[in-house]
Amino acid sequence: MVFKNYYKILGLETSHVSIEEIKIAYRQAAKKHHPDLNVGDKLAEEKIKDINEAYKILSVPASKRKYDRTWNARYGKAQKAFSGKGERTIFTMFLGNVEQEVKNVYNKTAIKGENIETEINVGIQEAFYGAEKMIALRTIEGNIKNLSITIPQGIQNGEKIRLIGQGKPSENDGKNGDLLIKINIEDSKSFKLKGNDIYTDLLLTPWEAALGAKANVMSIDDETNVYIPQGIQTGERIKIPNKGYKDTNGIRGDLIAEIKVVVPKQLTKQEKAIFEKLNEISNFNPRNGKIS
Image (cartoon, rainbow, N blue to C red):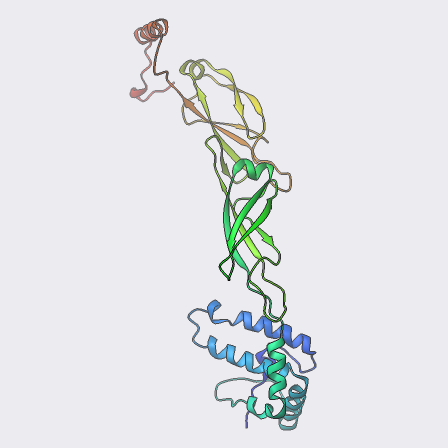
């Protein structure tokens, strides 16, 4: 009879391992070959059956010793491990008097609960300064559980916060899973976040754009004064260094002010007269392809 090499199935290179090492190897192998993580692999289900079979035998000292003796008697300690198609299982050979012991140990094995993933939206100011947020989760029993989470200053868009033990319950008194919360940073009316840079609009009058000026620009945490060069156009940008978003490492991006020239919708008589006079004396025509 050809036996399956249960140690190889669990990814172990030797039989000289402890029960705890067998448990660790089992968890790693079961996670690696789980059908949900191996979509399209037709052999995944068979691999899981072999992994469970190997664990049930090797996790019980009595059946492990019997398996080791049988393997060594048939193949010798130096025989290479193998496993492949056509192998016949020796699982039933070891059930005998230890069947109930195997079941008891397997049923008592602590299995960590699954992680839960969710996401929440936070404002750019909340992310910049840090904030406390409340989220509501529905439990397996259908109840609502409210949790308070701390948004650290400078968290990145898409970063996840982990709440230890707030995931799905474990089996057999193991550790609960964790709750992973993805942070989505929302732009405000005034600021848009791109990496560590913050974009904002700088509104100018036609005469400020034409003549040049000094203007105050609001950043997310203060106000700064910038110089507007003569003849600046709508859509051009002015970069203000180190006035952008500050991450958790204290690295700060830039504030990018995008120019928007705004024409007054209503004019006083004097303003209208000035614009009419300008229209008479100016040779400037943006439609002839020459801006300067």
